[in-house]
Length: 368
Image 1: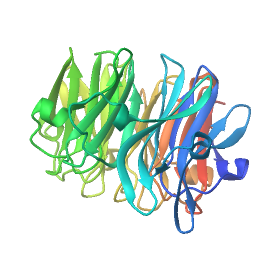
Image 2: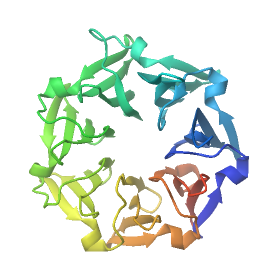
Image 3: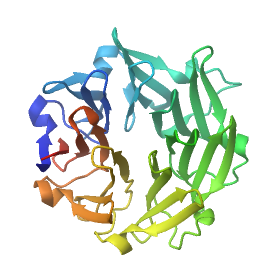
Image 4: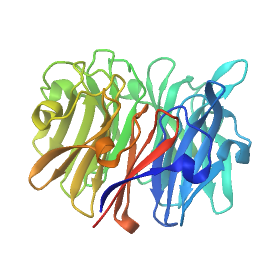
């Protein structure tokens, strides 16, 4: 049947959105989840709202339900598969004071939603540096949170069942000599049992902090891949292709092109997606969303273009292709980067973004 459109605010009568949403699926429960900060009085309402699907879409105000501190920017949501729990990570906000510089977590188990202050709960030597902007959480055989501290160091919070949350200053641990210019993102690679933290350096290079055999390392991927100029301008994102044994990283260059750095057994390689596949330039601040779609064995990379459309690069056995998802679905113009996930139970793909009318729009693909 192809790509379809769904206006989640119209479906649920939920509050409007101000920033980018974060989405994920919960296979064990057969549910989908989108979290975002609400929009009100010309700015954010400070509340984290959840749109969740189970035989229809529903709305939940997680901030009100958990009595948690307000959110500053964008929340980051993920599923912890091993324990069947959900987690939303964010930086807090104190009215009249501003950002609280702390990493907060809203987490769900069978008893409902709860709040934790990870900055207080972390077993670390001394005071953790305040968080800048939005922390990022993900699941890779455990819970992991990465964030940029006030000293521009990359910090890594990891949940240990015996000791709770523990922090590692990855910049110090790896001796990475280049500070972060933007908050990091991360992913895991099960085929190699490695973890990967990505960030844009102040030198315009894409940097990687990667873990294997209980050791952290630093790598300048721009240098290692011999990526051509121009340099990176915005936040890089990545994902692993387990069946193919590869890693893919995407970012916007200073010329507006979408670039890919891909890894195989011979090392890292560069590809100018815009020049080689087509499509318009990415908007300033673009951060692509990539994923694997096992049902068809395809790869997908979605980004926000300068035309305010959501564009897609997708790969099958014949190579990479281009698609304008906004044109394909008649979707409204976008004002945020997309988030994307797959729902294996229904063999569907989902791309979610904040539209110009501050509605959360879902573009979803269903098989014929």
